[in-house]
Image (cartoon, rainbow, N blue to C red; front, side, top):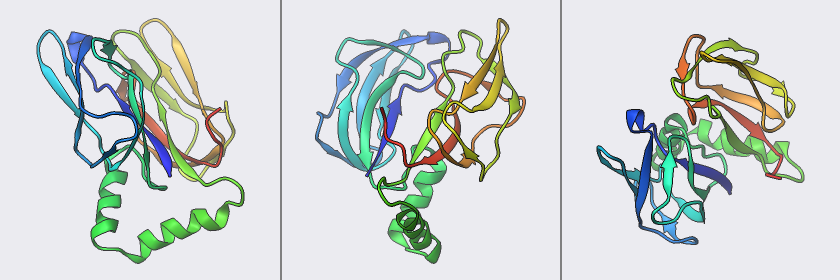
Length: 200
């Protein structure tokens, strides 16, 4: 099993929203696309679904909380090899319905590579870059690179500052989700890293 995060989506000009409904409790099993949390801003009500089937491990908000884009709503435990992005989700759904040789190999490789800790995919996210976002001006890694914790992976530039984004874990870069010149905001996914490190 691995953990994935459920984040507040981009709220746009609204900036913040209030948690008005929580539809599940910690320990509940949830199917993909089930609505987990309902948010309300000045302009709209938003239903936030879980992208994958799994167990609700931890709720990070409660009714009445005010949240912003990129805030952590909940943590789910899902099957190993799953990730929170749409590409991995589609691949997982295809593997469930029509198992292929590739999907079998993807599951077997991590098992053979690890001895003490089971590999998991973690997503590197854009930190708080303030209002207006920031532009990606440098990518210092590529798919297949082995990186160490705190290695600088990306460089962003906002109107006020230049920010270096380090790796949160040591591991292998499996996917890069951004391109040079992209305009990014807090909570955007930068890259996927396969790691055997645990959260600490």
